[in-house]
Length: 311
Image 1: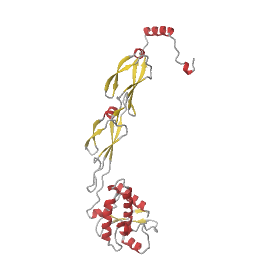
Image 2 (image 1 turned 120 degrees about the vertical axis):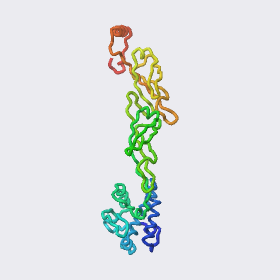
Image 3 (image 1 turned 60 degrees about the vertical axis):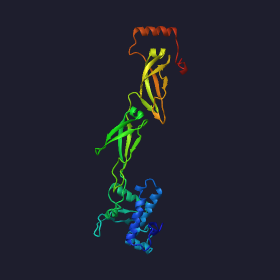
Image 4 (image 1 turned 90 degrees about the vertical axis):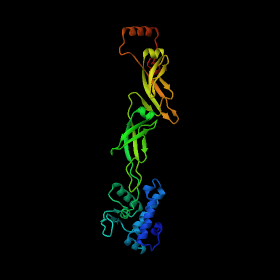
């Protein structure tokens, strides 16, 4: 275990004020909220916190200097640390601030209590009018958009619970479940710290006839028997609008035709729209069609099920 005097960078005969000043300086530069994602800084902060917990308490410091306890006070099963609730010589204390002697336990307890708003472990900063600036918490919201808006992009206005309105730019090619981050639009910071961010989760509503798979847009297109048998030019809806599609003669149901570049953006390119044909008979078969089909079938018999071993 590191020598707490060396961790704080103070001499063994340092005064209480010198120890506190050294700790405050290190805490400002190493605090995890001011160094997000920096594991090395987080580990140093843990060590500094443990060192100050020991040397900042006159009784513990005396026992450590006398060799009765080590740098963590590990010989005690549990420790009770008192936290200022009010400043000044007559300050009251909160006696239920308990955790184990392990450095990780101490650090985790401090952050847990602060996140729940139950305590302010760094209250001595407040006593001197010098509270640590902390970034505000992120705020999470959900935004429902249509499939065309997700594919082509859009600007949507949302109103936050506090009454503030924001314009959210949905990038072209956005997918269901994607999260947009709006810098500085979250909860306010503390003691002059920056505001958190607003995290907007996109919810793409189902479309009545378009389906998105990756960057391709799928649609099932009903065609008539003459269109499928003889071929035709038909109008097809796309995300961009209507286009003309050529149906080859002799097309069957499940035939897939491709409209290049009519899908969702993918970088500088776009996916395709895949059109699956579905040959549909009339709602009712009149005598003309029935007579024609009987005569045609007698003259041109063909069996589609031989490949299934059913003939």
